[in-house]
Amino acid sequence: MVFGEANEFVEILRGAIPVYALFFLPLLIILSPLDPVLGAHEFAVYRVQQYDLQGTAYGCRSAAMNVEARTLQSGSYSRRGVLARITELTLTKYHEIISQMAGGLIILFPHNLLSLSNNEIQHILELEKSILEEETSVPIYFAVETPEIRRIYEEIEVSANNVDKQPTTEAILSSITMNGFQFVVGASQPKALSDVQVTNVWGKLHGHGIEEQLPSIVIVAHYDAFGVAPALSYGADSNGSGVAALIELARLFFLLYSSSQTHAKFNLVFLLSGAGKFNYQGAKKWIEDNLETSESGLLQDAVFTLCLDSLGSGDELYLHVSKPPKDGSPGGKFLQELKAVSASVYPKLKFDMVHKKINLAEDVLAWEHERFSIRRLPAFTLSHLSSHKHFSRNTILDTRDKVDVGALSRNVKVIAEALAGFMFNLSNHNSTEIFTNSLDVQQGFITAWLDFLTFQPRGAQMFLENGKNEIISSVEQVFSEYLKEVKVSHVKPDKRDPEFVFYNANKAKLSAYSVKPALFDLFVLAGIAIYLLAFFFALQNFSWLLNLYRGLLVGFKKGKQS
Image 1 (cartoon, rainbow, N blue to C red):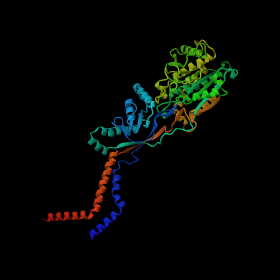
Image 2: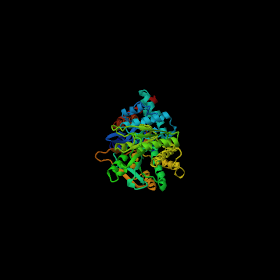
Image 3: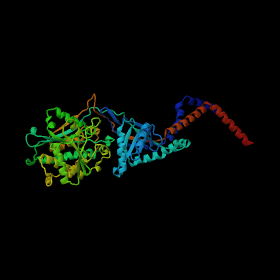
Image 4: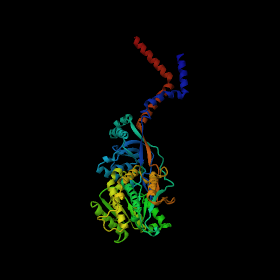
């Protein structure tokens, strides 16, 4: 009776696989290392630059990531996600990670950049330059080192890296028991942005007299910033300081021109150009438009163009020229005015001229004035930097705290006085200052604009998101308050042979999942397989096992009776 019921039970199990599958399903749940919700963390990450310029590709060409996490101390990076502090990521280590074709690289930078030493700052500048010099297929992101991500970093460092350095047997055992992290960035392959347009904003102050018969002076500054990641490029000094200086100059000369007694016989044109960090595409298009249209006289009648770039620091001021202006020429006279104002009003300010010929063999021009000089238009750039190669022009470290508003206000004053001295033909600045009292430079106005410009990242790609940018709208508004004939023009790359190409996926979310390593999964799989085989063997040989059990039980009872 009992054996008959047992045989029937066996037959039922043989034809009902889902029933005995329930035996090992709880096992899988028990072996799960963590609640998936509690084991997941999300962080904002910022992808390294990706763009094409003059047909050459630069930066990071991938975005998606689904890899096991390691730190720099790990001996192997292939197909793994490397989490590294920017101060510890040497150039040698970076190239090693790239050459081993890591699955991804997350670079952590401190929340408080003021805590960085001078050596660390120099190291970061060199690292940025190296990352941007060549393209790579490895997804590279930057992230702020928050307490939560710091904890994850420490856990990875303690667990995974110890395994890498243990003997083989111990490493296998540790791999089975330890917890790790899986980094996932669910981004699609970056795509080239279509319908890209870069914006220029410009306006005029008409001189005293018949406008068409008056000479002009053009004042230019590009408003975009550049760093290793577009969404982290705030460009406070380069070139937020130049934009703030240009707007303050527009305000000052608006007030000066408001009185008939100080209304100079010069037209002033103020241009804020886009894509300055991409070979000055905005300025290039603006020059082409104004030389080829009915307004060509605007540039042809310009005595010179003054470009403003990086004016927010230091006690030096340099006039960069492609060709030294001749004595007695408008450019030469303005140069003398700058020297005179610097010496008389700010004797501690070092002023000098830097001559650098245009190198047409380079893919990128050195300064914005070279765009005008190529077209044989007199132009120069004012900057506190002595060289265009200075790393501070292209870094995510160029933040608001890097700008000395006092130095910037002083430089605006020097420029305003020199321009006025040139236009009114003032030869002696020992006792003459035009911009004083109600016409004085307003440091508060400059500070407000600088704070506004550095409140959000100004990488050129960021101006293409979410419709019209707030900065562009604000510039239009302030120009309309001080200038006449304010216009907005756009630069669109040629669709067949574009000079520049931007890509999407500049920001993303990184999910860090606390997981067991792949070896643990294999171990569990092997255990389940053994369990199922044993269970299947028991079902197939149920009668034999039952007889064996009965025999053992009878033998045990006989032994006990004797």
